[in-house]
Length: 228
Image 1 (cartoon, rainbow, N blue to C red):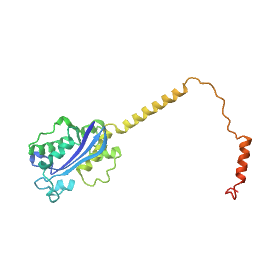
Image 2 (image 1 turned 135 degrees about the horizontal axis):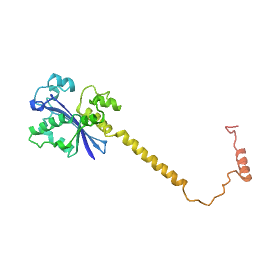
Image 3 (image 1 turned 90 degrees about the vertical axis):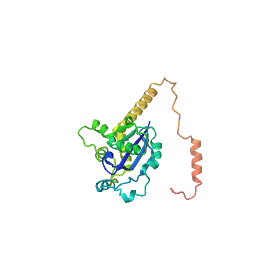
Image 4 (image 1 turned 45 degrees about the vertical axis):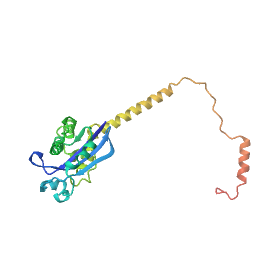
């Protein structure tokens, strides 16, 4: 099954008050395995960048000033995600911004039925535990040492690893290994229970006197042997 893990960076917390999406990163997965195909884009928000938001992701208004407008390149993103399920951490936030951008350019909203929220998954699997992306990376031993600031593509790549774990990634591997052991054991049993065959006398492996004589003659013809 094809799925898209994605993350966004924004100018703030609420698209209804004028905040805009400034970055999106998407990671394609097929059967819970990243394919290597990604989508990454920055967008000019056509507004200022609050200091609090810039402190989180490091994207300044100056940096974004020459980036394309979302409405001019929206088709590229839509072509990439297709009709696949969309996985995000606190997905309601990311869906709200993505659909707000689509509304601004008069495009159809993405159906919420496609949304998969890893926060909800983690809450169900680890009740009472910390649910941030950093906390889940620590829980599952996922290296995030290169995550100095938030970045949409980097966070999507980390989340893809977390998502696999939330789906039982390592346990899936153990189950496959157990199935393989069972198959091997069945094969061993099958060999042990093979029908009786006629017993054959063991074949002799000692050299004959003739072979020994030829060997001595060959060895005597070697001059200055290393073992001499």
